[in-house]
Length: 162
Image 1 (tube, rainbow, N blue to C red):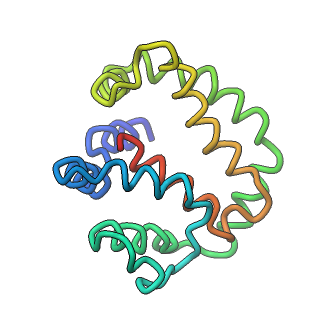
Image 2: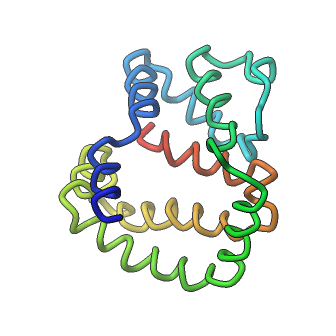
């Protein structure tokens, strides 16, 4: 398991990284950040027509992000909901303490925070904790795995360096 996590850390998120680089290179960051403030849900299998007002590569990314994970089943959703219902408070507390500290102490995490400008400054740690906490809080919302709210939050986190 640890080897799998380290491999994932080294790989990153190539699709999100490429999109963020492209948006930065084309000076579209402000437009995308404005969009992020309005996105509350990303419905499963969002049709491309609903995303037609966006740059094509961003629309395709959001469409792909709305797809269910390969092999995901109703039993998986129920198991995740059950786990979160039972352990949500503890998991959120651990994420807010151990997870944040681990990110700052990890070479990969510290590099990511430094390179995205989220490491220091007055609101650096607080802002980072707030963003991460939103993800965990959202996981515990009723039907978050079904109604698109968690997909939207995860997608925003994937693209957060923007």
